[in-house]
Image (tube, rainbow, N blue to C red; front, side, top):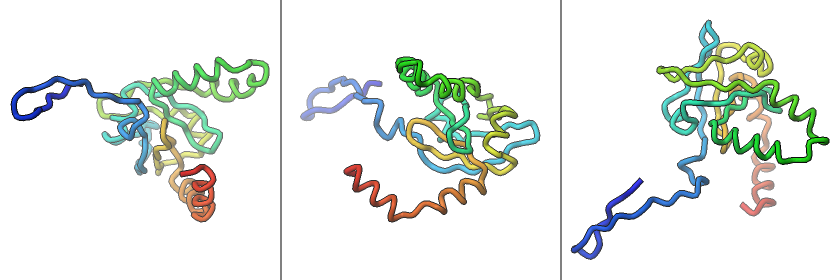
Length: 165
């Protein structure tokens, strides 16, 4: 993207926008409540679609939820996984890759939640999607509320201090 910048009242200069790819413009965050329709479809809100893009990758999480990656983040994740020594991660790859489902959002921003992933995450009708940095997670609304409710803010504060944040 290019911007024109006015300098000293006399000239216009064209400059390039610089992005590291790690700024807040790429951070997937927030909490969004949804329902899954009778055809197992769910609408992603426009704000979240902007961050995820039109092509997304759904897969099992290690928690009882569905991880949702933008295609670029999924590709980076899988490249790192493939670069690791394979002997020690075969089961990890089986767990992750067996559940991967690449999808394109339809014109209304909907995605089909595959039955196996829906069952894995214990999803019924009411779900919550949360941003967790480089990807999103789809949770059963009650399960997420219970999980978040079990987090002790003092533990979060201690972890932030430990990490130097």
